Image (cartoon, rainbow, N blue to C red; front, side, top):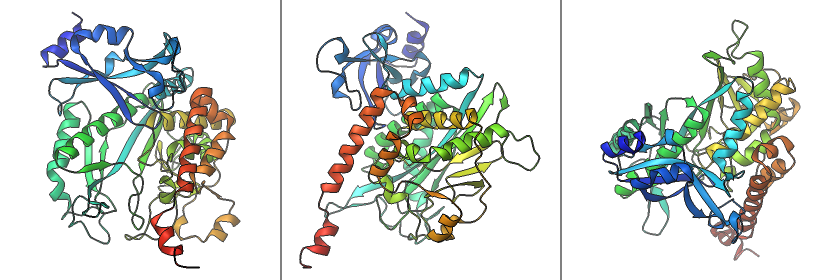
Length: 441
């Protein structure tokens, strides 16, 4: 018996949840008895490849089988599922690492950093909604008393979800995550949990663990945990902000050389790459039709959307795409529906391109861009992010750097699926259209 198997057995584990992530950022997997841990580590748990979104695998032959090969370092008992331990799987096909496995895509990107002696650390800040179905089938905040016009940090509604939030904290802490804070966000039924930053691959694994826990614990309480970017038109949406820093051993590569600056020369070049590839990054970081209901500037019930629409950077500027801070930056583009592995891999590719080409991010923007009229934005040469999923996919297709980071298979599958999503949305006749036009002409 291996040391890992013995440790898990002593922890009361009898079953493995072998989990991988599909192209949409959804957790997938199967249950495997602990006795078969060795097989999971050697060859992986098997799945029908074409049944998984984004693989593009055939329905017959050796390449029709997808294997999630367990990463032993991720094996962790799940406190909310007694007797079960999650182990994260990397995709393998025909005995080789699968080029379209999102986790493998990220590992390829991180290998480029490792070749320079660098590691990427990210802190991911998930925002989410707790919802329920109304009598008419509409979606509503789970707490029907959560009605403040400006609900950020509300200490009336927050305690009403203390049971869920405390259970989530306990579950994540027991699974090894350092939970820093939990708060009510700026929309009705919206919350945020922050856990400590870590090496990029581990941070993405942690986010998927968080989603598994939150779905389970919300369902137990008759609620729906939602990472839909913008469920309510008149309120802010859910971001998935990334706090990003680059390290050489224990030295932060982004620490500034100049007193009073936020970022080093490499840090500014990395940010410049993120700005230069913002359109293509949008497809990965805001990957749904609904994402572009969030990426607009305008009034909401609470006064602002808090979502960037303009390609700019500035010190502690939450109205810019990139908010720079001492030794790190906050990438404010991603929303809660983003696949963390793909968004991070694309971010690395963009940042490295900025470093390799020694790009300049331009002057720091310190103004409130949400107050600027569009004419002034244009006069300052500030680009606008794509305003639809279709535009974002077009930008991705035109971006050789980001497409290369994804690889031919995954880039092709991602664009095919997203164009189909946009087409389905464009052809759908909504209640808004019927109300506006049915009797109008």
